[in-house]
Length: 257
Image (cartoon, rainbow, N blue to C red; front, side, top):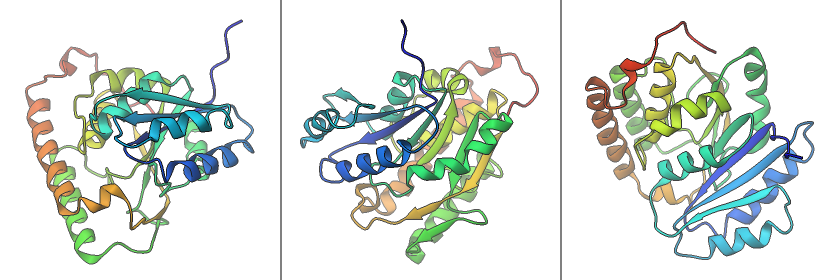
């Protein structure tokens, strides 16, 4: 007999996260074990140089719903998320950061909109009701806001936080969006959202509680990460203009939730 599909798949991309992952995975399992739906947790080890894969394999013996997706060479967060989304089997597929900046219990904020029929629901740190604790330094807020305005002007008007690492896609949306995804690193979020938009999916934003982790490997990159996102986004604009995704061949229909 085939194993039933889980209601929720949680994808956690990880690079050199052997120290922080255990607490994150325990926290995810603790919250979801109380839920009234089935779930699985997939850690995608993005070619870590530490013993991330070993740690996850050991934890899988304690957390029965935990699976490891592993490959040898680092490819980037975008690649890891894409692979995890396509390897997952859940009706809904949520990716979140390995530092647990937004805890999985906030998926409950997304559920009402999924029940309404939305296929893409994303967490946002920049809409009413969101909490960032502690607040980011002023220079990061300025860089983030400028970058967001640029992205909105190019192709995602109304999406106030494209980079938040807490996004949920339905199985249907995953199967349409992620096989086409090309960006392997920081710019993968705007790419996935724009592809979803081009397929006619409405994108619902929900406010989340985001805890800044001073030790975050992404944050250590500093302003360089913003620059890399903007380079990727500019490249995306040209890719969409020249239709390298073949989207013009897709039938256009009414907006989907």
